[in-house]
Length: 193
Image (cartoon, rainbow, N blue to C red; front, side, top):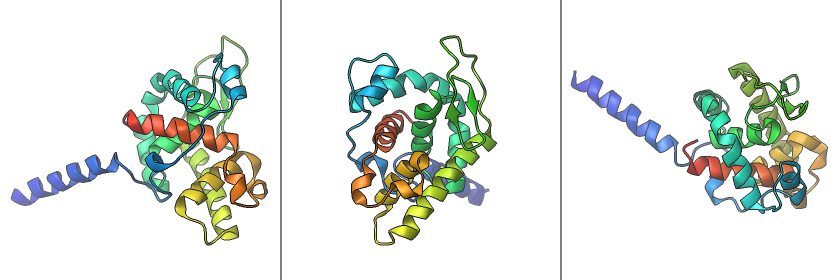
């Protein structure tokens, strides 16, 4: 019986440490990012941009993303990606799953208008989206073997939309998609993702 309690204690400890910083691509809490461009904010009805806009958009999407939180943790463990990053991508790509999605190549927003039906995103769709991100990260790792884990994540996020050829040097690591996703991911991390 004491062995069982020891195992349960270790599991609880592992689960609580998971929330601080995990994933194979750096601690997103330490990433510096300018956040969303003004165009992203305007498209969602905001009159401001930057980290404040990214955080507001993440806050709007958070209620929709909460239902996927257990799946994000499972997928995050499988691919060694912080669930907050997965939440950031999902928030950016589909407003937290609150609009129609086409997960053939990952999750891409298809906004049919203001009365879009809510769609349910499956674990396989989140896995596919995360797998695409990992493929992009690995392409960046092969092309730039001396970069750091956070540069790989930034490069993978930029390549997620633009393809691996989009990233030609470290100067290409500040794309709008990456900046916005990382700012949203930091927000989600602070809110339990």
